[in-house]
Length: 465
Image 1 (cartoon, rainbow, N blue to C red):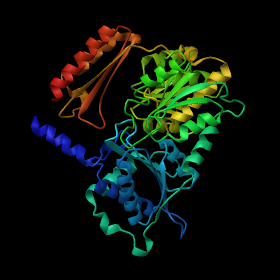
Image 2 (image 1 turned 90 degrees about the vertical axis):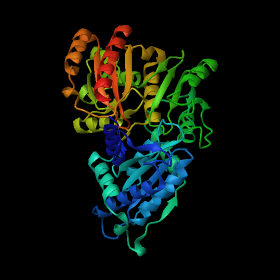
Image 3 (image 1 turned 90 degrees about the horizontal axis):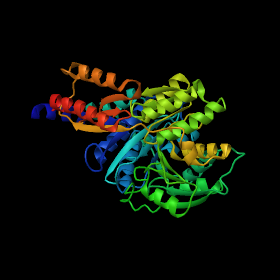
Image 4 (image 1 turned 45 degrees about the horizontal axis):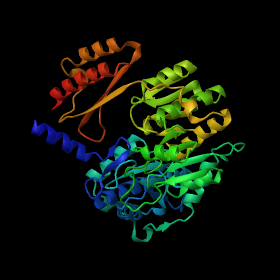
């Protein structure tokens, strides 16, 4: 068993990209300066090979959140790109969706974000956007991995006369603020609204307060004092309790909580009720459908979205399409089929009419636009969706097998699905970043679905440990 576990770990070590870019503990593989420098070199080499008008300079934007390790990794990444002849523009702290927008807006060849999103300060990561503002495809991620793992990149360096330059740009946040404000209807304003805004001591600590304040709201800001260590530390989208408390204390109309790189949002209604990504999707879908602006009359979500979302959308006559976990998969499905609304329960909400990726500020403004247009408080809008009880068990494994080949698994699943009927569902998947299998069961009876989840997890642990 130990050998199997070692083999699994070694195979995973060769893989850099997970569900959403590269991620790990800072100063540990893969988030070490030498590996990140090689990632920069690999990216630069691929960009250099792409056709461009003769004499045109290649340029990549690099943004980051507020983690201490961001400074170290920013230098390593930009050095790798420079060594391949690529110029780099450094934006400093900026929300991840801001880099997606600016990559396209500034005609960059790529945009890269140094962030571990909602993780604690000791982690960091890399997300890469193409020139079109969308995250790069899996095929390009695999090619970067191949170059880093199998090729001596020092043999591919640019000529001494062609080494790239790095410079800091000062107006990136301002450009992003203007762009986000323009996604809010011109005929509406936020005047008269009191909003509690939690920036998670992360990348949005400067931009987000300006966005909502300049649209007329009274903004009470939390989590806007980053020190390199306190990003996501009991604040932000994963910890909405402080926002709930502040909404009630200040009698605010609502709360907005962003995560460390501001690509996800969780909201709080005026009564202190938490409004997650599924609720936000339901609220926006209902409004868009009523105004004939929901493309394909369809919403895209992942397998982790609550079954209550299915039921809420069915009442509206709206179709729900599910994808694998990860906002990148949601975006791919939306682009492939021409849909304009999708997201995740965790708060990654994609309005493809406005943004190329999940954007917490854009998503919050869309909910605010619904509140203003319909004259309803957030608590009333939230009532259109009822959360179905949900049990999630994460079980550690030492090997990966095709689940259909595990004795007894298929028959157990069929039995449970039969008992749940139309009032629930099951979903089982391997984690993309750690030796874990996730077992999700939903249904109206919390005790019964807990037993079902334990049965499935127990069988898998026995067979995969």
